[in-house]
Structures are given as structure tokens and as C-alpha cells.
Image (cartoon, rainbow, N blue to C red):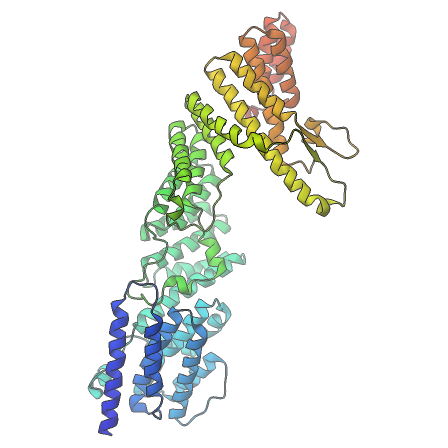
Length: 583
């Protein structure tokens, strides 16, 4: 007996030495496979001896440690096998047999068999591991069923610490655990609420999830997880059409965890919906700076380093809620918002930073939290930046970007592009051809827009001859595109209103109207009034709601001494909807 006791003391020391090695690696994201293997070897040695109550705590300690390591390495099948064997050994020790396969019932039977013994409180540790496996494998229904059992209530009320004083008196060496079971239960509680809340949100049942999320925000947990509860509460309130209350929740999330990028992202979206452009710009600016910091998206794992919250929060519903754009996508949106809200110097700076980052050799190596990128194609980015530079009175820099777009697109363009409206019922057959045609159309539009902007640049420099040249190049580019419809006379202005018309065709009409108006204005500045009137009238045919072209058309008519027509044109123009002036 003394020799057997010495053997168990030796095994206990071996377990404790492995736990020390494990805890030395606190903060690392994974447990080495060798450590898991060592716990397994130790467990096989212990299970070579018939189960006894006196030594069951050591065996269950090693089972607990080995399972934690398996779960940390996402080896869930191996962990479940160890748990099942532990339940069988416990029942065997009490002279009972395993006749149920349902995990909660198995553990309720095992725990009941050791009720009123020193082993009872310790056996409550192991069902927590089954709970962790369900959570990590996104099995939320078994967790909901488990939460309705008396075993769950016993775990919540009875788990804490490793061993009581009676154990320390009975054993010379007390087995240690790789993770405090109380901390594990606290982690599982808040992660379960977060995962279940995300699932309910995904199902459109945010109002059901809200009370539990609000209650979970008061649980002891890493600050990043508490921030998640505020974040999801805000998402619930957003779905319930309570944007101001949602903003308060996002504010709490940021107060709890200053690097909660998801709260910043959601706040910027609400500000956009509310039309609060200045607050949206501020939120986007902070979001961009935060995304550039060293990775902070993973919740703090202090004290629970072996089981990362990311491992337990693996559901797709939650991933969708926690997705944010890439830093470059946020920077692009920030630049665009600044330009649209007449914060031109800031917008120019952001666009130049964006282009510099895209051309940087190492920007792909920057670690980001993003799940997706919403950046437009590079030529479109160049054109947006060129507009910003033109607005900032930097025509030379604007023209340089436009030249880059023209040089990279011209060689890709055919002599003519015909976009044919498919016959009814042939949609599937022509889908590939339509996509190819629309892609080519986009390249035409980029080149045309670049020429248009260059015309604007020369107009800003009052070089009217060069302005006419570039506006003409824009028009010549656009007339190469033909829109053909079945059984209908081809008129681009009418075709632009057809239900199947793409946004690109609308842009084509706008470009045509703007380039003709620009050329007409340039001609008027050179006193070529007949040519100016022709182009301005053609511009109004392409875009009847063009206020600028209408006013200049009236001006040219007046200078041609056609004052009655000029007055009529001005009257028509001023009666146009005011929002057209922003086109």
C-alpha cells in the first residue's frame, strides 16, 4: 500500500511538473502537441490501476488537464473520448454501469453517484469541458438543453478553486490544474451568451437576445468579451430601429475596450444612416488609426491563456457581425466622405496616403483585423484622387493621375463596343457576354472620365484651347459605345431609362453631357459662340437636368442677341429640382 501511495505521489508530481511547463507558456496561442501527449501517457499509467476513490482526484485532474490541451488544439473528438472514459471509470468505481449515451445524462448520473463525497465537487469540473466542446463546435442547441438541467445549476454554484483543505490534509502532494475551473466557467458563461446572442440576431430575434446580453455585461470576464456584449446589444437595438440607444451601447463597448474596432465600425454606419457626416468622418478616422495598431481584435486571455475566446466564439453568425473592412477600405471611405462634405484638404491627404499605401511594397505584410475589402478598382481610385486634387486647385497633379489612367487603359480598348439588350428568356445564355461587355464598358468610362478631368484641369488653368482638345477626346471615346435594344429604336437617352440598364450606362450619359458642356463653355470663353451653343444644346439633350449647361446656354443665347430664348432657357433651368445642382 505504501509503495502504491508512493507511486501515486510520483504521478502527482509528474502532473504538477507538466502543469508548470504549461503555465510557463502563458500568453501563447496554442499548447504544444508534446505536452498533450505527455498528459495522455501519464493518464494511461494511472488508468492501468483499478479506479479507487482515494486516487480518483488525481486521475480526474489529469483527464481535465489533457482535455484542456486537446480542446486548445481543436482535437475535440479525442477530448470527448477522454471525458466518456472518465465518466465510465467514475461509475465503475461506484459499482454502476454506463447505459446512456446522452452527455448531460451521463454526467448527471456520474455526479449523482458521488454525491455527498469529496469527489462530488471536483467531478463538476469535467462537464464544463463538454460545454466548451459544444461551444467551440457551434453546437448551441445542446448548450441550451444543458442550461436547463440541474447539473448546470450545480456547476454554476459549485465550481471554484482546485481542492479544499480536506484534500490538502489527505495528500502530501495535491494535483494541480492547467486552468482554474472557476475561470473556465466564467469564460464559458459569457462566450455562450455572446454566441447565442449572435445566432438570435442572425435569425432576426434580436429583442430576445437583448436582455441576456445586457445581463452578461456584468459577468466577470476579460474586458474585450464584456465589450462584445455591449456591441451585440447595440446590434440588437439597431435591428429594433433604436439607433440612438445603439450608439450608447457602442460607446460603452469602446469605454470597456478602447480598441473594439467593431463598435467603431458600427457607429460609423449609424452616423451615416442618421446623416451625421461629421461624426461619421470622426468615427472612420479613429477606426482607421485603431486598425493600424498591433493586433487587438483577439480578446485578452489573461488567466485563461490555454483556451482563447476566439476558439470558443467560432460561429459564422458572430464572424459576420464582427467583420470590419480593411484599413485601406476604411481610408478610402474616409477620403471620399471628406471630399463629399467639402473637407477637401483632408480628403486629398487621405487619398494620397491611400495611393502611397497601395504602391508600398510591404503593405501586404501589415497585419489587419479585416474580413473583407471594399476598395474599388485602381483606375477608379486614381480618378477619385484626381477629382480631389482638382478641387484642391492642384490641376498639374490631377492631370498626372489622369494620364496614368489613360496610358493603362487605351491599349485595352477595342475600336467600338456594342452592348446588346438580350431577348426575353435568353438571360442565362448571354450572362457571360454581358459581363464581358460591361467590363469593357467600365474601361471606356475610365478613359473618358480621365479626358474629362483633364479638360477641367485646363479650364482651371484657363487654357481653353487645350480644354477643348481634351473634352473632344472624351466625346470621341464615348461615341464608340453603342447600346442596341431589340425591336426598339436606339436612343441612348431613352435606353438609359430601360429597366435592365446598368449604372455604367447612366454614367456614360452623364460624362457625355459634362464633356459637351465643358467644351461649350470653353468655346464661349474663346468667343466661338455658335460652336458653344451647339455643344451646350447637345449637352442638355444628353442630360436635360444639367443646371450648369442650362445657365451657360442662356448666357450664350444672350450674347448672340437671342434674349427672349435666353430668358426662356434660364427660366426652365431655375425651375429644375435643386438637387440636380449636386450632380
